[in-house]
Image 1 (cartoon, rainbow over the protein chains, first blue to last red):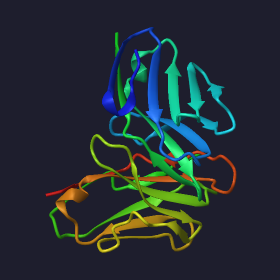
Image 2: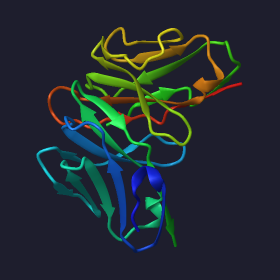
Image 3: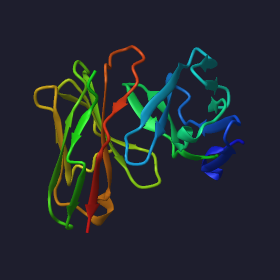
Length: 111
Length: 115
């Protein structure tokens, strides 16, 4: 499944499938990007980050892709598990270490 | 390492009352942020401190909100008087700061309900 940010803020996937969550950022001068996972009643939790001089970075079961040309960021989660159900936010860093967040995508994993 | 600590976890007040939130960042983190998160939205930056100085407070409603970090460690955020639209989760985050790529680490927030 694939989310297109503001137009589709919810995403449902079957357990074991791959998930793709998209984010459009606003400032072409942003130099650092982070994906966060937020579970109900908790603060955002760091997942993976990427610098603007990279276009791909991989972690454990997660990959972040950065397309600076169109100011687009995506998070790919491999073999999605029920524990991955949460709201996912992208954040961009502007000058002065200010971080701005997108509106988020709610991911539901269907067992 | 211990995470970002916030208190209280929940607060219910009536409009026009005042309220204060407290944050203890991760030890050694120079930069501290306060965010407001309204239900169903992403966190919105209110204020950023570098040590005990304010870096950015352009989105802080200064007629009713104030924040301080007097000794460059703990921070408090105050609302006086509160309005109904202030109902939200107030998140504190900290980072090493500086010129490196240091992510924000968040506390679990204070959920404020204004009635």
